Amino acid sequence: MNPFYEALTPLGYKDKVDLFSYGYDVRRIGDNNYSKIYFEYLKEKLESIFVKSNKKIILLSHSLGCPTTIYFLNYVGSVWSNKHIKKFIAFAPAWGGGWFYKNYENQYYMVIMKVSQ
Image (cartoon, rainbow, N blue to C red; front, side, top):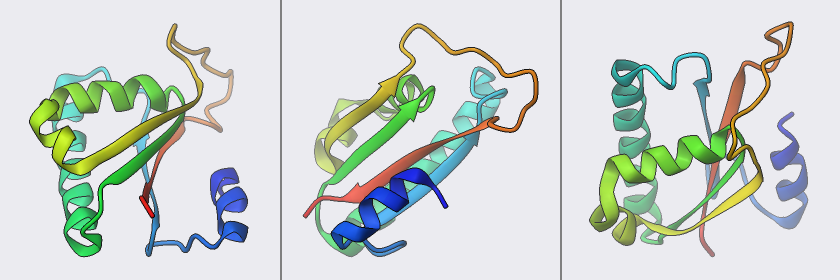
């Protein structure tokens, strides 16, 4: 199980109710074509969560997901972000980049969202 889920589910958060996770391919996020497709997908998912909950969303990202989330927020712009996002929490951010492992066991970093309470 995802470590964030392990930490948040005992606090009462429920998968696909107020806790959501969206992964991406860290090897491709610098590709503008991939990023545009992924960011449009993520934007659509977040808008759906926002409409269903009628609450702003808290974004929680880890490691390379943190600069990717900033990239996403710049992509959607401040008007969209101010309407849909309550705050962004960067957990162990890799602002200076990250090291790639010899194996690609951890090639997918998760961007985790939870609906604000």
